[in-house]
View 1 (cartoon, rainbow, N blue to C red):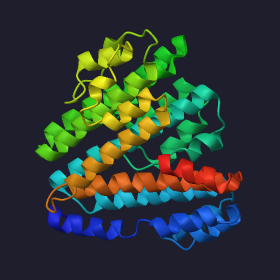
View 2 (tube, one colour):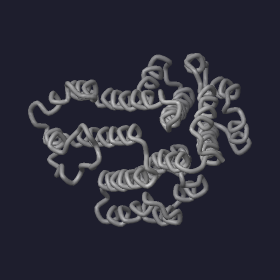
View 3 (cartoon, rainbow, N blue to C red):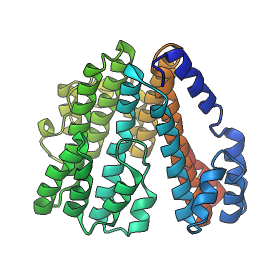
View 4 (cartoon, helix red, strand yellow):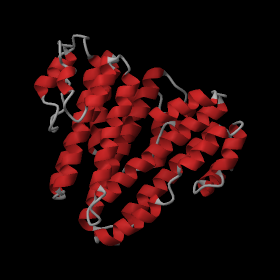
Length: 339
């Protein structure tokens, strides 16, 4: 194992070179059907995982398993070859997958989805092992799923247990997700302090908090909810007063963001297109990650790679569904641009 960023980042650049390029996506969009799509995927670095998944079954579930397994192997290869501060920081970065997976399980239980649908939405890459996540997906309800995940004893699973108890009484999925976000960002800040994280990474993490607050404000804008209960501390740009104005849908609240980092997202929201606003928020975070990656002797190269890998996995699952259900090429291409 190594704590040398030069060595670690050289390995990560090699992994980045294996990410799928524009040519692959054009070929996948042009694929005549789902069978042609999977044939193309089998000629990529996902070949091994796809073959293993197809040995257990076929269809969308096989693609989902292959993509999830590839993400898991990729992330844990980073952990298994690093030590010291780099390993601490990579573990911190991988927490986002745990948050996303717990939310996916919660949303599936709330919506009454089947086990296959829930398991197909998972990206095991953090501390929560694939087998444990699969057990939680099988659990009978929200509380049972929380009890399964509690075995992992992480900050996020502990918050899920508490939030699931409240959910049993109020059935408020939004409140449950907000509790998970609060726990995630608190844990992230603590772990960053414990690891003596560099200034650049701290700025990036603060920008993620700003992005979360902006997403929340846009979701509940004008609904009359109590804004103070929803604000996640730790950001730099979106202060609580601005957050309050957005939630209250006050005159000029979106316009006040016009000169800042999230100007394009605010403009899209003002036009009523929340999907485009979300895409613009992701662009901001992607650009931040790319800037961090300019330093060859720091954690930024890993930050950028993990964002790209996560985006690739999401796009592959979207393509698989589009081809499986026969979505027209133009419509699928538009969805891919927002994934």
